[in-house]
Image (cartoon, rainbow, N blue to C red; front, side, top):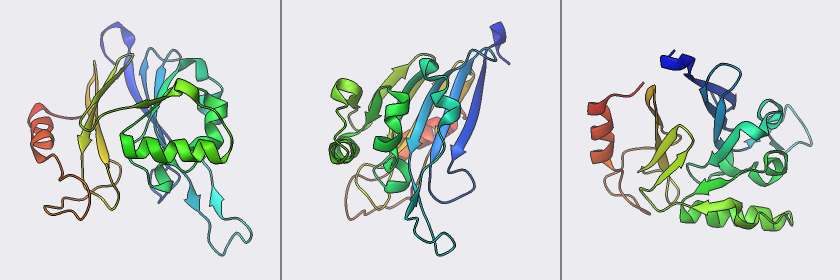
Length: 194
């Protein structure tokens, strides 16, 4: 625990140790007084064991019950397992959403399909950009994957830096998008991550 009794905590409501349904929380503050960010809010796909069900959403009850402490949703990329639940669950959360341009365009369409007006809640972050949410200073780190604009998030807090990579690969010659920002990853490695 840091000075002043504040700490950094991680809570996965989906996606950790499984494929899909990503909904990860990072909290910072005194126990019981955390301010939270959500990283990704996706679906998982059903299989033959659950007939009639196509997609499964994470249960956001934990964070929805304290949405006054939720600073925002930060999206890494536009694959369904990372953004597929956003339009369904956002009405329970009603907070800002941060995404790079391509991901933001996909998110807009998801809300449009459900006839939900998110107004100015969707914030577009440039590639390699930065977002400051409370004690969280978040740098978008360009990665490669099988979709445009995949990002890792270098989340700096008073406790140190967490590198949340989501899905990625090192591809020196990607078919679409930018190359992985190896320089930024190297800098983070030298600086040290938690």
